[in-house]
Image (cartoon, rainbow, N blue to C red; front, side):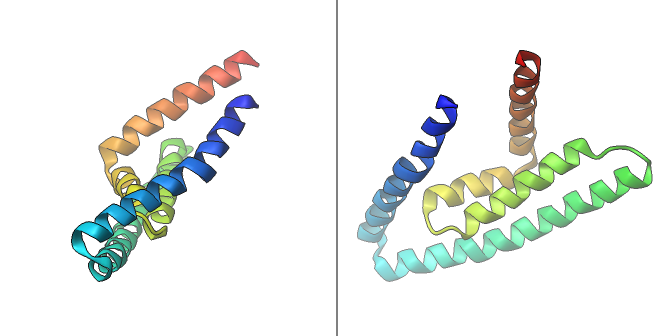
Length: 126
């Protein structure tokens, strides 16, 4: 439970402050209008990439179901692509970077392995 409070504190306090700091720095460097334009461009391109990756994951899920197999890996990938899409439409460069990384299959594979180990430890612990 204490871990969850720390994570939530990080998400709701530290991340927005870091995002604002980066936005201010980029705004000073390239100008306010260019910063806003860049954020909009990244959101549009990110939404397109998330849609493309999401459709790919959906096809893999359908293929697994047609074979009569449980699409566990594909479901986790679908969640990670959805999370990436949310991060990409959230204003801020740090969230955009994380969102783009989650759209890359090798990064998703690594995150999936970490999540699998974490959940396996929690299940074994209880």
